[in-house]
Image (cartoon, rainbow, N blue to C red):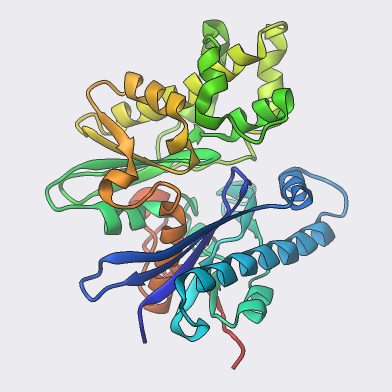
Length: 372
């Protein structure tokens, strides 16, 4: 059967779904036949955001949100097939991650949990394609963080023998992959990416994101506020580590802004952008000071102001998007979930203990077969 897979990604930015239809060639090279992005309806986006916090009737609401998300995923799948001209029968499987609403590995009982809203059974019914889902929980069960999962794909797609490279994903949360020239891999979540930036501009200007970082660029960094934000204990934890909106949410920001009443909103945005740049550049310099090439993916790669701030702080490092390595920044994570589905179908491990801290590499995911 052809090595054609679909990858679906809806991340912590919660702006919608990116989908790719990709083919692995005989030489293991990846070819993207189609890429589609569909935004969330406001009501679905609001509900997914709300489910990140405790609330009434959560189980019922999460189940219905999972159904709604599956329908949006199906819309993306049908658009991919139409755009590529591929028949349903050509697709071996799809990787459908779901929407993470709680991520608390190793907490409470020593194992913890990670929870994604999804309805993979409904997605299989709506598309007629095998669905590989629940891609984090096996790693958590093995003592790992369950995140980030993309470093293994980064190694497969961007790694070169004898070359070192860092890959930074700037989604709602920022995560860093460090590919050493000896083949070793380290990866972890740094902290906020776009989550706080999107929240602040949404609250102040009713915009979903700061296009190009122009609003942040119009402001000035408030050093006392930046220094206070930098005291977050998560930033000083050693890898393996992962985080999400469980930590970096609106209440976290409001608490830290309280002593700084009267700041110009654009100055707050500039300071939040500087925080993201600081934590990403600091982690690169702390854990891989010899790496001189940083390739950036995710929505933040299109934020010119943020990219410039990272470049200023990452002294001596060539900072560019992953397009320089042949894969556009808005396709990388969706491709990663297509790769994870492929690894499951081949029954090959897809986790890296050096990244997640698990007891060993594991085959990740659960299969929801299409109707016979």
